[in-house]
Amino acid sequence: NELPHLSMCVSCPDFEKAAKTVMPRKSFIYVSTSANTGASLATNLDDWTRINFRPRVMRNVGDVDMSRSIFGHKAPYPFYISPMGTMGAIHAAGEPEMIKGAVRKGAHMVVSTASTKTTEQIMQSFVDEQKRLKDSSPTRLFFQYYMPVDRQKAIELMRIVKKAGYKGLWITVDTPVLGKRTQDRVLQAEEALAVGIEEDSTADWEAGGENAFAPAMGGRVVSGQLSPHTTWEDLSWIRKEWDGPLVLKGIQCAEDAKLAMQYGCDGILLSNHGGRQLHTAPSALMTLLEIRTYCPEIIGKLEIFLDGGLRDGSDVLKALCLGATAVGVGRPYLYALAAYGAQGVERVTDVLSEELATGMRLLGISSLDQARPDMVNATRLLNE
Ligand code: FNR
Image 1: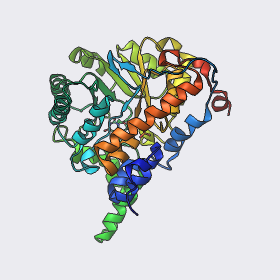
Image 2: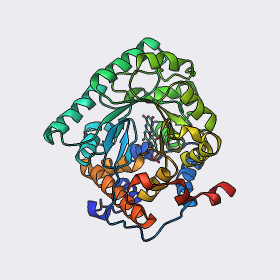
Image 3: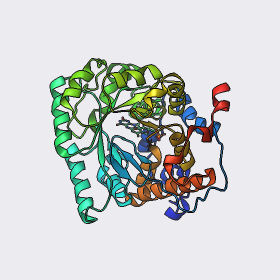
Image 4: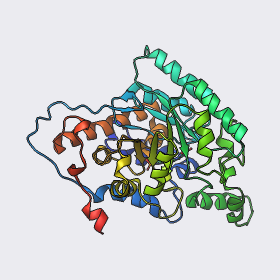
């Protein structure tokens, strides 16, 4: 199984196939794994194909403008790289390699708390790449935050993040405990059997699920710190401590979207963590449709992001028609990083933006400001 030439990757699924030829089984499983039977991941992928466009024709689509801003930071695309931990297990250079690819194409990126390198090292690699390009790239880094148990540590980390120059804080709220990562457990059992240990790995995961993150935390956040105790009340002190843009990542119903607004968040990210947390969680698309029905006033007041299963520029376009500010893309970027390094990351951005530009032209719009809910028909998804 030879790694295909990069030019053979012409759509997002190609990067997964390429990555499978070169990735050690353990890291491939880390990326591809999902919760329980895999139903949440399958729904994420499937739901995008279950809504259709309602295209308009003859509308002069010679030039298209795909640019979008996230909290005032304009990028050439309405999609960004989702926060994903432990990139050191995916590529020898880790997060800085992903950042190179992002900066060269001007894509925004959200950096994970569970990164292999420290918060400051990652920012330094961004600054270095920007310098190399004479600060011409619009790329900005935002920070994804797992709430530590210890409030003092939480505050300390927020200060580090602020000082380092990250442009916003994305607090992940769908992970009070780690979901059941099925393939990871099979692998763990296999590894144990290989050294002659015949024990059930379930108890381990239940007792210390969050500890599974520990080795990845770049030394900053240590074992047992992923807090299952966080409540909405915590947002009041967080809001005092963090005066920049604040986003809750992992909102999965209209009620919580409303609460996020009441508690002073600037944005919400509709997400089921790439299908890795709650079994049969709603897709982000379903949650967006729910918000459109039950609290449409939120759209326009908060910046609305979503992620999960976006594998084509047309998926991105559907999300924007329905009111998303911008969307996150996860696994395709990790697979590309594994197989081709920064060049692969650049190519995913090219593939998605080409598909988006073509989709916009065929839909009959020349700028994303023209993307409207009536350009999408979701009745099939909603009525089935
Ligand atoms: C993730 N995700 C994630 N989210 C988060 O808030 N912090 C993290 O550290 C990670 N780590 C992580 C690792 C890997 C390997 C994956 C695949 C995902 C979830 C991620 O931000 C995003 O929500 C999903 O990946 C989006 O779905 P797709 O695009 O991968 O289908």
